[in-house]
Image (cartoon, rainbow, N blue to C red; front, top):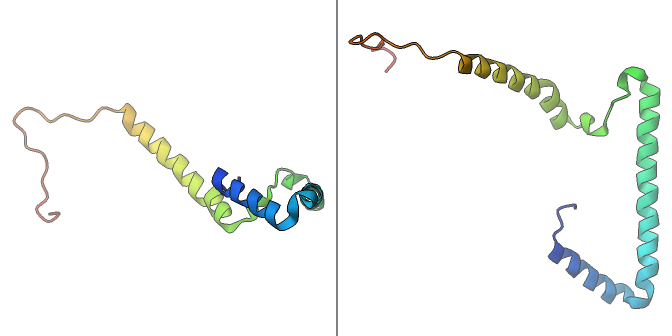
Length: 112
């Protein structure tokens, strides 16, 4: 959760009790919960409005797709991995060719 471990959560809780006091802490937690709920609702509404404005061909649009790194990975790298997987599966199915007994493998002196 946000890269925060259990120890960090305990430290944050202790600091919150010291800063806000045990009497005001429950009210602060309720206010923070309401704020988080409102932010999530605003994000969901913005996503729905964006999808509605772009039309039915973008109905499956995710905001993560707008991140340039995810865009490149999705549209450039994933198709390459699919093609590589196809090539690997083709070569896995064909057994390697065996040389006849006594024949030396091909050698290219310029390659070494």
